[in-house]
Length: 340
Image 1: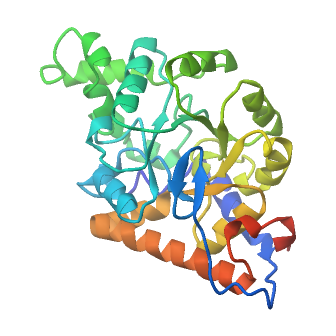
Image 2: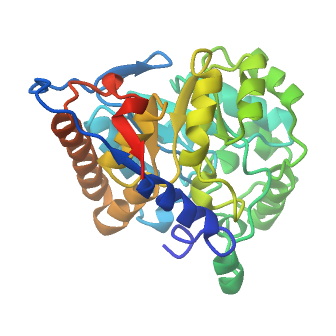
Image 3: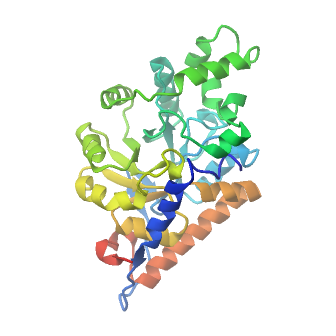
């Protein structure tokens, strides 16, 4: 858990994410007949029982030996959408969830990138989520102090090590020279040169919805719309990339105002409770992605732990809507919250 819990730098962005939720207060309405609630929705063609998705989280075997397999099964049990990380400890094809999206860290090697897209499509992933805020790994003192990065030990590289295009670039099989495979990953993962024009390659090779994750600036949200993607995730990577960055919730309202009619706006970073989700939905998000809390459940009890966290989260969201006078989350709007 020492890799999962810490944030970038001094943790200012992570703290800001939590503080932003505290600055907004729900304004419950009375006598509105909210006995029956309906949280169901359809996001980018994916039917969901609630506006909650499992965020892409890499190398989950650090929390539990079953890693992503347990998390995906937990999501599937509840009918929720699971998002599989490029940096997962289990390969694309190992995830059997009914509703699953694939998160891409866009590599510098186009052959490997194309292979990832083809494998994800063949394995039944419906939406491509492209993470933009991790052209390289952020400054994380906790990791530096321990001298630990799981990928350098070959952990969280299952999608690469199982990929035919990646393996074809190695002089020897991975089993004979794992160090060379790790070094190849270290060469193709950093992609700080990624630019808007590079999105055309994805559109040419992916025939489903494309979502850009890591948007916190209104201008970038507008550019996303101009470049023909289908959605964005307002996110600062849970505070793990840029220390001192804007809180995701602080960025959300202006972004939703700017592109909410053109793009599906999703949200993550700092979401911990059902009431947090209600606030994000009121401020313009169509759904939220839940990350770290699921790994805490995973670490404690595997699949059952993830299920417990998800059930509690969904129950709190439902109860929050009921007590606030809303029959469904789509009724939430700016009048549903006040700035503290």
